[in-house]
Image (cartoon, rainbow, N blue to C red):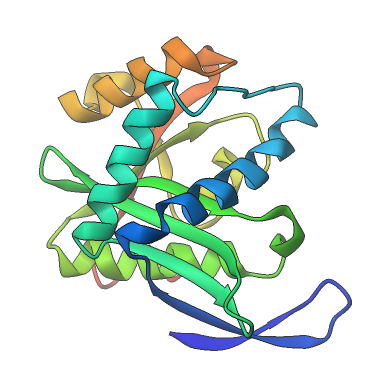
Length: 193
């Protein structure tokens, strides 16, 4: 999937979204590390070292996603990685494990294109809905996903896999009470992104 996106100065630049491969795990981590610096501006410092159990588990999931063809990477015309999305499957349903965009590439529609690609992949693997977990109080998290057809799901309706993910996140990430699960139906008549 390729197309144009605008740089911050408004000039068009080429963008390609392609499958991420397992050998690019360091690149995915670098993109995520860069994107995560935005949280500090909202009072959420996320500083877990590479050997932290949360980070190691996350990287293992991203590797699995890439091996299964469920990770997408957005690259610019020079082949530089700008953003990625990694899908997992939890309790038989697609789960957006991560969507990260480098800070220098934010607000150019790249995240939205990766989200649309993730919906396509989720449909292809036969899911009825795409799930994710996120913060409900940050504008680039919960409200962003709501604008793209996701709704917060009450804890009583979480699957066991979602519950485990949220528990892990609440144990290691800041602002644990703001971690929520969201889902978006994948029916072909669902609202477009």
